Image 1 (tube, rainbow, N blue to C red):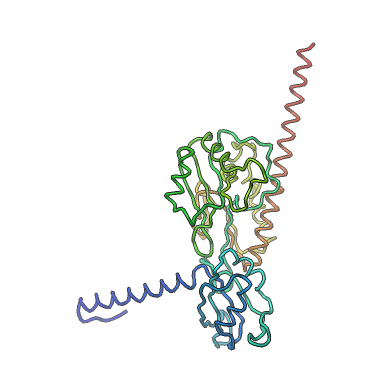
Image 2: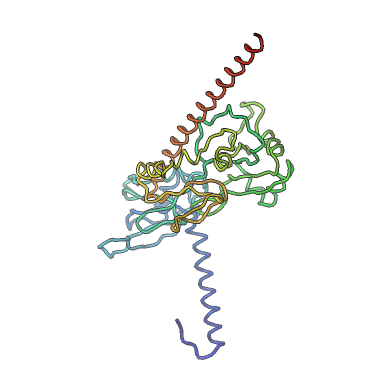
Amino acid sequence: VMRCETAAQADQCRALLSAELAKVYEAYSREVRGSLVLRGFPASWSEKGLKFVFAPFGGLASVALEEEIPAESADPTPVRLAYVKLRNESAMEKAVSNLHQTKVGDGDLVEDCVVSCQHWHLRGWSDGGLHVAFFVDQLAMTRRPLEAEPGPEDREIFVQNLPLQYMNRQQLQEYFEGFGEVEDLHLVTSLYSDEPTGEGYVRFRSHRDAQRCIEALTPSSPEEADPMDLTGAWSESERALQRKENCYRFNLIAELVGADGSGLQRLKTDAKLQSIWVMAESLQQKDKTAPPLRGRQMHIVARAPDEAHAKAFKELLERTLEDIHAKIADRIEKRRRKAEAAAAAEKAESAN
């Protein structure tokens, strides 16, 4: 709050504040958003020491050294932290995995210490808690029932390795419209930077157009496949949100949540989560404390105590989905046998 003598003075103060806030946001976007946060290193470390630590992961693109007073600490002494961005963004997960709670340094130029290395989170708390979200199609689906033939209700595909370095959203839209009319294009964004990850959903107006796109993105032989190629698969989110009207004739959401919420409660307890939500545009969310939607497709969001629990939660989700898919495959096989038995009985009756 400021006291100004004239309206012109107030306008000048507003302009100065706006300029300063713009500088702060620019620094935040450049140095903090989407970075790794390193803590636990001694005062003897300089930017040179940080370069040494991150050299195995492709080196630093930028580093910002700051001080903070740890949350809920009785000691008011500030401690150092560094916001680090890597030249190779794909090496961030490896850096976190190799450095978090690890002793680093060479004992000579870089003093030995045990550091904490974690992602900076858009939705994080001072106690270390964070929101994590996984679209169902981002989970490993090793037992997805391939016996279920896609039907007219399948119109959405999940795509990976989108060439974002060469194409913007409009160009991607135009590319997919080459297969038919596109009703919706959703680009999945990172929890750490809110930037597109290279994954997304494309919903076509007709199954035939979606099928054409799937065929174009599927290599004719496994030998031709390249890990960096644009790929597409039928959306498991779409099938989950169709309940029993999907090609499985099985309600995935009911199986995941449980009739009385027991399935979600079990996930919450086993993964030691503070909260968990199953979210999608078409699902009614009664919990007013739920985070905002990350897309119209089905995603599971949780508040986890730290990144280790977030990783364990994802693994638990994948095992749960594996069990659900195994149950679906068993149902499909039983229906197939029943149909074969009925056909055989009808044939025998006709013969008599």
